[in-house]
Image 1 (cartoon, rainbow, N blue to C red):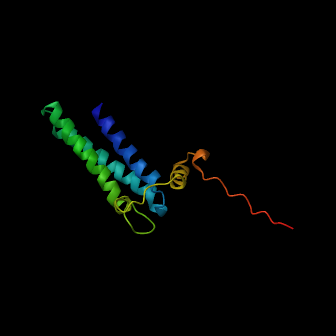
Image 2 (cartoon, rainbow, N blue to C red; image 1 turned 30 degrees about the vertical axis):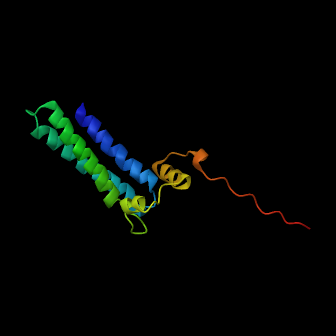
Image 3 (cartoon, one colour; image 1 turned 120 degrees about the vertical axis):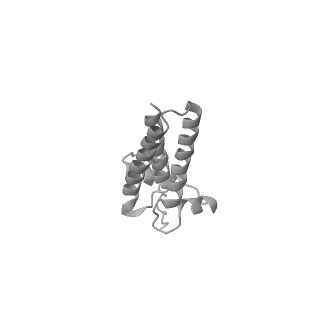
Length: 126
């Protein structure tokens, strides 16, 4: 049960970074897929190695690995401009409604409430 929890947590954290900063180019979704598979394999091996260990220790180590997977997504998620997501966050470049809309659209979710309203065309006086 905990293996499913940590694997799902890794997937959701990677998708959250992907949706928040969607300008990843063609390799973004591939990065999410491969990184999620690698971290899931890491959790499988961690659970297999710690079969005789006490439960709080197992949960602590796996929670630390989950946070490490999140930090690795922040540092290694490919971006078109070459600046890491971590650097964007540290410089104060937070996700906007437009980037969240684009990110959700890349995942396949159309949520038009996030879309910025279009500006009306200028009126021409005669």
